[in-house]
Structure formats: C-alpha cells, structure tokens
Amino acid sequence: MHEGPTTRKAVSRESGNAVAFAALMVGNVALAFGPWFVRLTDVGPVAAAFWRISLATPVLLVLAAATGGRLLSSVRGLGWILIGSGVLFAGDLAAWHLGIHHTKLANATLFGNAATFVFPLYGFLVARAWPTRTQGLALALAAIGAALLMGRSYQLAPQNFIGDLLCLLAGLLYAGYFILMSRARQTMAPLPALGFSSAAAILPLLVSALVLGEKIMPANWTPLISLALLSQVLGQGLMIYALGRLSPLVIGLALLTQPTVAALVGWLYYGETLGVADFVGAALVAIALVLVRIAPPRPLPLPPVSGA
Image 1 (cartoon, rainbow, N blue to C red):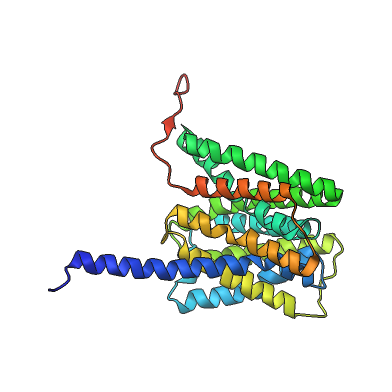
Image 2 (tube, helix red, strand yellow):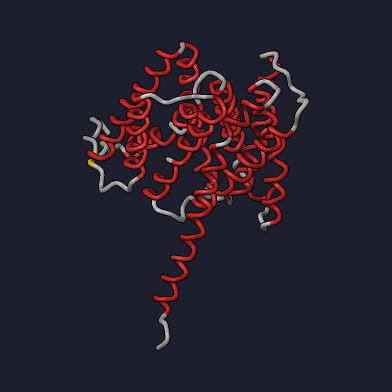
C-alpha cells in the first residue's frame, strides 16, 4: 500500500518539527550560559557585550552569504530599521551585562526574557483589542512572580535589586529590538537580518564602554570567544531557526530551560542558593511565560474611538 501525498507531508512535517525542537533546546541551553561567560571575562560588562557582537558578526554574515542570502540587496529600504534594531540591541546587552554582575544568574535570565510579556501589550495596542482571560492571567502572574523575585533579591542585598531592574530594562529594550526585527523579517532572511542588526550594535557598545571607563582589551580571550560563538552565533542562530517552525506553547516551555540552567550554574559556581520566594516567583513567571505563548482565541475588540 503506497503512501499518499498527505501522509508524506505529515511525516516530513513531524521530522522537521523534531529537528526544530532539538535546535530550540540546544539554543536555549547555549543562551543560558551567557551570564556565566560575562562574569568570567576580565573586561568591563559593556566591553564584554562589545566583543560578543564584534566577534560574532563576521561569522553571522559569512553564514548568511554561504546560505545563499543576497546581503546587500536584502538591506534595501531597511537601513534605518536595522540601525534602530542594532541600537536597541546594544542597549539591551549593555543593561543586561551590567545587571548580571549585580544579581543572581537565574534572575538575570528570567528578567532578560521580559520581552515575552511586552509583546502581548504591543499586540493589544496595534490590534486595538482587549487581552483574553488567559493573557490577562499570564500578565498578572508575571507581575506577581517578578515582585517576589525582586523582593527576595532586595532582602539579600540592595545591589541585587538594582541588578534586577537593569535586567528588566534590558528585557524592555529587547522587546523593542524584536518589534523592529519583525518588520525586517518580512522581507529579509533570518541570518542577514541578525547579522546586519548585530553590526549596527558594535559602535554604540564600544562608545558606551569607553564612556564608562571600562577595560576594553582582554588578557583572556576564552570567555569572550565562548560568549560570541555559544550565545550569539549558536544560541541566537538556533532560536531563529526554531521560531516559526514550532507552536508557541512548545517555544514557551523550552524557554523555561534558560533560567533553570542559569540557576544550576549559579549554584555550582557561585553558591547562589534559592529560597522559597525564589522558587514561587520563578514558577509564577514560568507559568505566565507558557500561558502568554499559547496562541490566543479571538480577542475582544476595544470600543471604537469617538470621531474615528
């Protein structure tokens, strides 16, 4: 009995999903090691972000060209969008790397993913629609969980609270980066978009590191090379590959591996123990992360604006 075209398509889709899921998991684990590499560097935190992008960008552009991307022609009409996304990405990395040195690795990873919760708000404004009950519940759980985590950090040491705020700022800037990149992705392939936006982040990061008076040149290149290749090239590259190939629920569940791995690294290398409030807060944020990633039903429209 021969397989019909529908059966072959289903088998092919399942196979593709398995590869995408493997890429998603590996990408999340790679990204989770980023804060650890930042702490291991012997340069300033913003300087580490500068080297992360500077070392990774040539690799990304070479990969984009090798996969058949028309680099220069694909940029036409998107210059300001790519520059803007690069500036936002630079701000995201600068704030996040500064925050990593002033809070727990798990907190830095959780709050660095705040973009996940900002996107629904952006969507509501654009679509002029009320959030569904599930989305509203997710946002409420995220707020409560974040408050628990930040409160626990402040009890341990005030500088942890500052680190949490910096990582939250990074998450908001990352959301802006995603918004601009989503526009670029409408006409550009993933790797060229990532490569050019990364290139636009190099100069702002270098200037920021110099203004802050940070040490720029490293004595030990290993953590920086690992940060560039593992987090930026492998982690971001695999995440971009997986996006659009898996359901939002699967993506959301897989994202939970990042704070888990980061917490494990923090416990093994820095003795960062987690209390009950940390576990409850992290669990609430994790649940919200899953809920907000679930494809929502039809949203409830907002009432029309008078005179519109």
